[in-house]
Each structure stands twice: as structure tokens, then as C-alpha cells.
Image 1 (cartoon, rainbow, N blue to C red):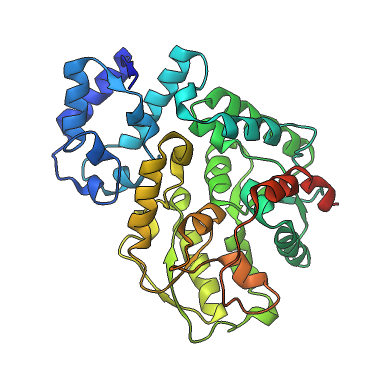
Image 2: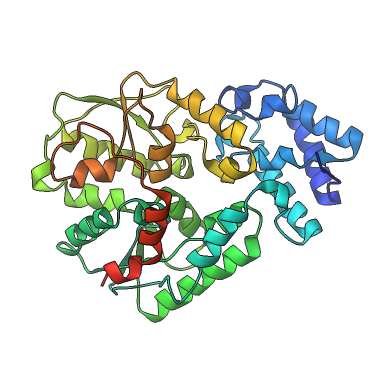
Length: 366
């Protein structure tokens, strides 16, 4: 493993966190990677101080999901410390290192951040529906069904742009911040007053980084409007567990909106032990499918093992990660807008077809 020396500020942070950590291991109950590097955060950070360095796999194995800081009685955030390590590695290397296996993701982002192909608003409105890459990659027809439904009730346009979260997660924060600033500048000039995020990763990124334009989730809007008439009580008698995506763990209004929509669909919701603000990552967080695939798979299996019924979630990445032949997993938008009640889970999108849909999405939105 490549070793890196922490900066003075990072070293001081780790020493303080080690001092504060009480070794309760609550963070390790829902984290699949900490145990690979030590007994607890105190042990991990003290080892770094003793050796004067940390292995590259430590920060790049973190899902950056935020579970640790939510359950820590001392408020310690391993996520923030590991992300600072990623930023320092990028600064030292001058690029995303090859060992991250992220070349494919970086190429994808290069295309997705192209300001000619991906526009802040393909159709304009006071609000902008921002479905995000995952939904457009998987099913542009679904994206347009959701958009047209909202358009009947409000002044809304649509964007095929990317939020740049993968770029930020890999440690290219300045590049990601610049892209979000570009989007906000364009939207302000167009008189946009609200962004409606269809993707939970996009919600987290835009809600955090937009300076003046508020961001809401598409589920909050749909809960206000109500489910499509044809979908009311469509799934009466079915029990599902709800998996809350980790990017919106701190957004109870989104958790409530999804459960309200579930009730209108007739679904009997079973809550998981780790849900809402204490939810667990699906295993795709932090770009770990590229940077630490074994950790990613371990966490996905850990989450699947909690399910006692079919799973309902509201993130496309989570849907694709958690679905398996043994475990049916459904996306909320599919349940709301499918032409017929869904019995079987949606087939995975072909990567080639999905990428083509994503690149040519602007034409489909006109």
C-alpha cells in the first residue's frame, strides 16, 4: 500500500479525535471498513500518529456515508477525516491516483460536466426538475413521466445536467465546486427560484453547495401533489421494508414524504433497525465500487441481510446495489409511474444503452 504523511492540520485533528474517542464502537456496528484498519477509531488514529503515515486504502475504503458521526456520542466524524485525507492525497499527487481504479468514473464525469451536452435547463421554469445521472441513465421515459406529472401542477422546467458529486468524492473538490457555481449562475440569470432533485446524491450536493437557490426533493413535491390517480392503493396488502439512502439521512422531511407516498400506494411499511438518520449505506457510497470493491460488496451484503420483505427505496444507485435474485428491490418512482402494478423488479440497464440514454438525454427532454 502507498503511504502518505498527514498534514499538520490533519495530524492535529486525528490526535484530538483519538483523545475524544471512548472506544464504544457504535460507529463500527454499521461500518464495514473500520474493522479492516484497527480496533476502533482511537486505535486507527493512534497508529497513524505512531507511524507518521496512513495507507492509501484507508480513506479510499470509506463510504463517506456519515453513519459514524450520526451515532458517535462524542460527535467524531471519521467521514470528514477520511475525506480530508483524500483531498491531501490529490494535492500531493496532482491527480486522482491510478490505484483508485477511477479512470472510467473520471471519463464519465468529463462527459457529464460538458456544458454543451448537459444544460442547467433544457426546458425553463420557475422550478427546475433535476433528475440526475442515475435516473436518466436507467430510464429517461420514467424521468419524463415524472416531469410531465409535476408540470400539470406547477411551473417547472427540467435539466439534464450532472451535480458533479463523483468528482467531489474522488477528491477533486475545486473542480466540482466550480461546476455547481456555474449551474447556480445560469439558474439565477434565468430567474429560477427552486431546484427539485430527483436523485438523493444530487439533493445532498446541491442542497449543500448552492448558495442562494433552495433545493427540495421530488418526493416532497409529489407528497404535496398526491400520487397519480391510477397508483392509489395499487399495492394494498403488500409489505415492504424501506431503505433510506444515506445522502439524505439528515432530511426527516424526505423520510416522511416517502412514507406518506407509500401509504397512498397502499404499502404496509416495515421499518429497519437502521433507518432514517441512522440508515446504512447500500455499499456504493464514496466511489468505493471503484476504489475498494471488496468493501463495497461486503457492505451491500450486510444491508441485504436485514431485509425480511421486498425492499422499497428512492435512490437509483441503492435500487441497483440492493437488488438480487433473492431480494426484490423497487424504486419509488417506478412504483408510482409504472403502467401496471410492479410484481417483478426492474431489469438492470445495459451499461452501453444507459450511457447512450444519458448522453442523448437533452434531445429527449425537448
